[in-house]
Length: 253
Image (cartoon, rainbow, N blue to C red):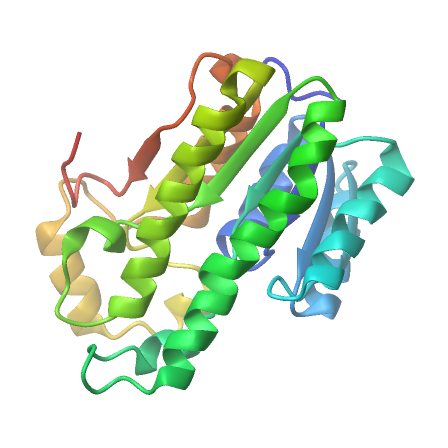
């Protein structure tokens, strides 16, 4: 893919989709720094990328903590001198199962969802944008979700946070697009990560397959390919857009 070689890309959130994205970017020649709440996972992921011949560093990241986000950005600057792109890809998938409805949901669940899935994205944007501008421009890619548009009877906090991420993305594209900053969002459908594959109920898998306009459910590499494209120079005239990567489950313009 044109325009990924030697780019410095920070990936905030290295589980599932993030892991696949780190490998995809490194395979294309990018220098990647990955941060994850599970610091050991981030380090192991970076080791695996380097063993495969790529350039990657890993560290612990608490995306809801401003100092931790700043440390992530500083680590990339200290190692490579600048940043060309960031993929913000974090959500607390433990509390999402308690995200019931607006009347019954504990406010602690709502607050934690917003801390990770919204505040964290704002913190990443505030930390990396000045570095992209110093570089003469760059790309921000946010992981949203088709949940932002489905209108489900459950998971209101998750859906609200993802819809707000899309609003944040449009703000960044509108405010800094003429300064060569691109911001876009990828909205996955049901993506079966390695951890999910072992626990996904057959009933849910079969129900999802009935509504998808494809022959299979999603895999992390499906999202990683879109992220890599949006980060690359191939996508230099794409700005302010939401891309549903969902096998055709949700059709929207």
